[in-house]
Image (cartoon, rainbow, N blue to C red; front, side, top):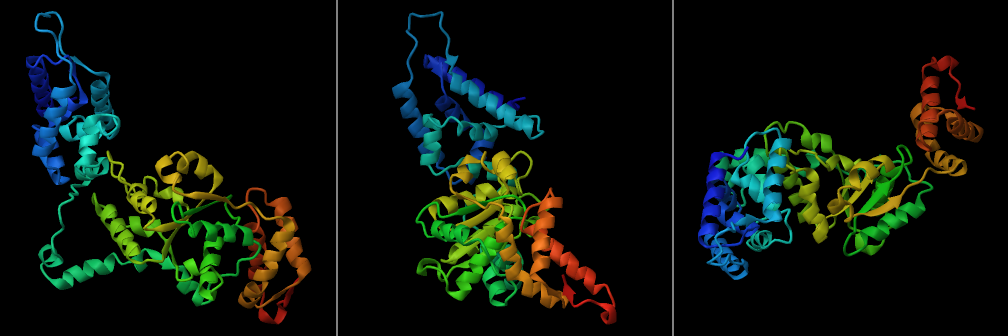
Length: 422
């Protein structure tokens, strides 16, 4: 299971520990051995680590902290610590889970980060090497070395511009402010409390990311659209008056990413563009889908891992939406991501509130279907959909009823068409 190079590194490490009469073989001994392992060396160099500095610090730490076996004790042997064994077991498990057969030194490096209390993990972090950096290199060959200039990469400026055009923000996200300005967003009715709470969270200094949680069809997306409409109308606090809401399309991001690293590169470009805009707010509908989105086999480099640093630093504000089921089974379990959001419950509106929502939307549907809806018809749509359509939720199912009624009336020839849906 361990490749020959790794086995050789471990054997040498044990031999050196025995020669120095060290009582225990620790995670620090393991990291020291990996500094002479080609696979681990390549990964560390790709992450910009100074191997000589790490080696020197490890030598000092091991000499100062490792107990020695007495000279006259000939029965005792150097024993691996539990943490040493856990690291190797974890590396084997991760490799097996990804469908591969051999464990390399770089795989063991990744496993060391799970021993968060170890000095080895501390030294790696101190030298600006993270678990994500190692995984990026193993899975996608991504390094932390400075990127080449576009002219060197593509041969000419035109090709570089063409690539930049493909990764432009507007190709993967919709500017909801522009949509609202064009009058293509329906008015938000009956969600003042949820909208005010969303604005309040966005105004925070840290953890300023609202998470709208509610059943499908209760109007979570409408809240984000309603916020964009209020920003355009100037009906928001000054702190977010200039904010621009971008609705991310995960499907477009994933489309065409057939090679390893394509998704990560594309998503990083999008995040960089958003980061440059001081007042950008990212809206991700069905936010649970970013967990695992774009992860290659054997790696954990998904959209969630890429967006976490920006959320934790407050450089990017994000509004997410998901259902209760996906929140509890997927999103909540990703603790590092979920704790950066403030949960806002979006409950199903009452019959009266749904009727008010339909009254507010009535003119839009009357204009589209060229009919008139009576108040009685709207109330009937609410009550009957609530009674007979059990697998869906208000107001979505009631809106569908009046939309269907209007569509059906348009099927009738103009000469015989009723102008009122009663």
